[in-house]
Amino acid sequence: MFGITPYVWMEVVYGVESKARQSAAEKRLRNFVLIYPAQADLDWAMRQLAAYRLSHGVGVLDCLIAAPARRLQVPLYTTNVKHFAPLLGDVAVRPY
Image 1: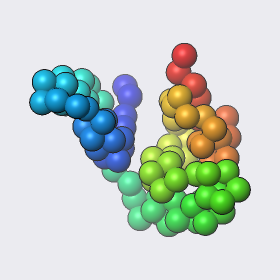
Image 2 (image 1 turned 135 degrees about the vertical axis):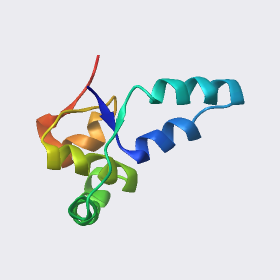
Image 3 (image 1 turned 180 degrees about the horizontal axis):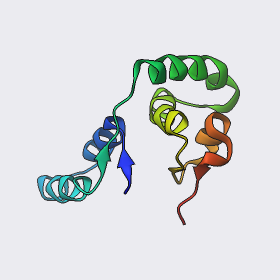
């Protein structure tokens, strides 16, 4: 079972260029469990943004997406290991 945060869901939908692609994206997204952030995730994300934005170029969404993976201690599969590694270390994994 794989999960995504609502932030990832929104990034995927935001990134499509047509209604047909949006429909296809939404269909694929239904294969994932939505993992909602807890208050502690948001607090952790804020601390990480303050700590790593300037030194590593970590963004707001990077921190928000990483937080539940950290809490649940599950791998975060991403092609953007550069931004997630400072937040999660080896838990940030390139899927291919």
